[in-house]
Image (cartoon, rainbow over all chains, first blue to last red; front, side, top):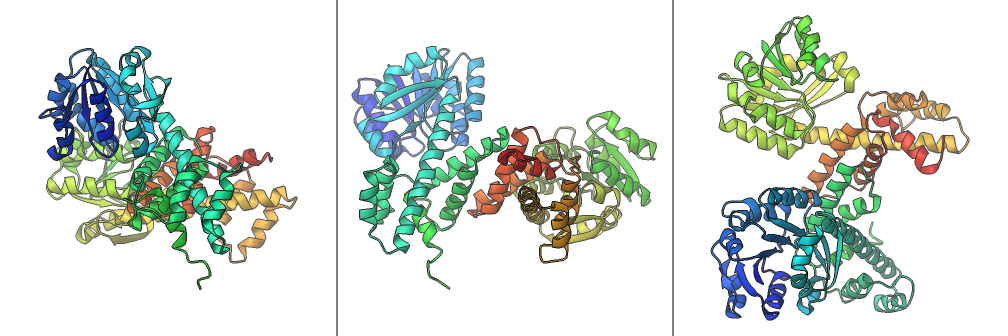
Length: 292
Length: 291
């Protein structure tokens, strides 16, 4: 299939590479040309604008940061919408607001262009291993057309529902995961205050009911005090802004998510936004135990 | 002075009347023409658009629901900027985010129009009795120009700082009143569920360190189960959303505000949005199976 790709960051680069390796004709566009260099070397075709990219592709996949980024890519000057032929499909794998996804899909529909929101979970590691969990919101016929592409990127693909439903699932994913990171950080902080060995606590817990992927991976980073790697916390901070805006719009109380968001706010103002979200432990440590 | 008034709702109507009663010439415009009727009967002049209003007054005041409304009134195709005469001061008394206020002020300044953000506290009663607290952000000279108009509507009028500072003060006000209403509702519900007369608890506490205007006024209305607005819960929800969006932007933890904002979400989602914000008590009763 002729596939376009935008967003060649830590997640997007290995994903685009998988598409090339699966035998698809790949075109790329990147704001900074050097971001595309590796893919071009492997045979991807470089385009000058998103519109050119869309004109050369049956399907364009985007994975960028904010709702605004996706809007600009789609309907900004020289945007994808200007290049797509009727029947083209925009598959957005970014994490954005469900309302934005629905609004973009509606605008595309007027032009005869399809939309799939297909955010992912699993991080950089899963992107490299092509084992991402993909949650899709789309009309069934649009999803069927892009299914082979998505299966080249991930291990599980769930059609959650209509347009926007993928982003709703992703919001749920973020709420559960980051709340679990906060819980792990608080447990580590308590163990530390008792002077108990964190590695052993974690190992003990991993055998019982509190075992979780978060405890395994992020808990491990907390034990090692390795805050550099992994998921940039600023992205979770952004996601929680989206979640709480939707909660206010819908009149849904999310007491725990609201508290986790406050910890993420503090994390940001401490300058740890580019570090892993394991830094929530450091937020707790800002208030020194036994100080005073 | 010639004063324009845009937005004649629960708050705007009595505020405009007070400006009129203070001897100013008042021009009004609202989206729904029938909203202007009471003011016109009292002697105000009805205008055909915000732009037309801006062409004949020295000060144009808006009192509307949210930032997009202010944006429309100020900068929309038939908005204030489209018709403003030389030296017009635009005064927005709505509650919107400091960032939105600054952005609108900056764009108006580009067209030579001064803007003050001047949100109020004191509710409908304060609006009727001209006892509002008015918190102003913007240029000091523009503030002095508008001061007599402010003094016709409020008792405490303060210039807090530059553009946006009035909205920051209002956000602080909403933190205190939002968390305060939640705390009073929790305390009174706690008393009731403990089998104690909540009215006597309130009376006793009024003499001590827990005294507050909210315990006094809102607490009494909770005891009377008078949930008529006042200040509607959905508006307080909106204000708490503004507060927490600013906190998100600034990297600031506001845990108590965050918890309270979720309670307001629950009120709106469960059909209490049109009640006064003291219906927080009803929400607590539902959550814990009381009353």
